[in-house]
Length: 92
Image 1 (cartoon, helix red, strand yellow):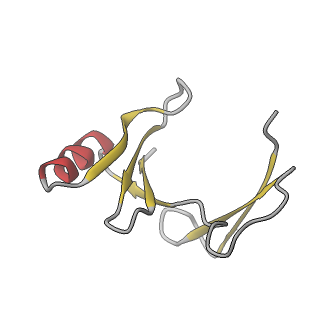
Image 2 (spheres, helix red, strand yellow; image 1 turned 90 degrees about the vertical axis):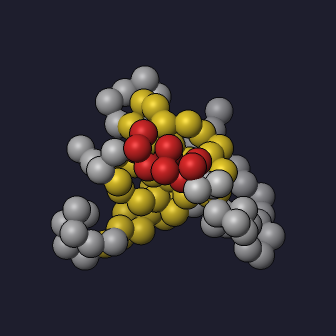
């Protein structure tokens, strides 16, 4: 079973400011330098439209736009040219 603890750090409302999510993965023995980074997340007006625009520009989509865990929040994952994952999350 996967277990994690989350802490959110920020200043001001999330819709107007940056929020940093810190994750502690229980049972993780160690990390190599540079592997403790998960991904960035960017809120967009329309995830489906953003994914199409990224695909049309030659970008790499690694998780198509769709509901997260069969819920109402729409997300997608893309990969930047250096291989870092970026989550696109729809405005609520």
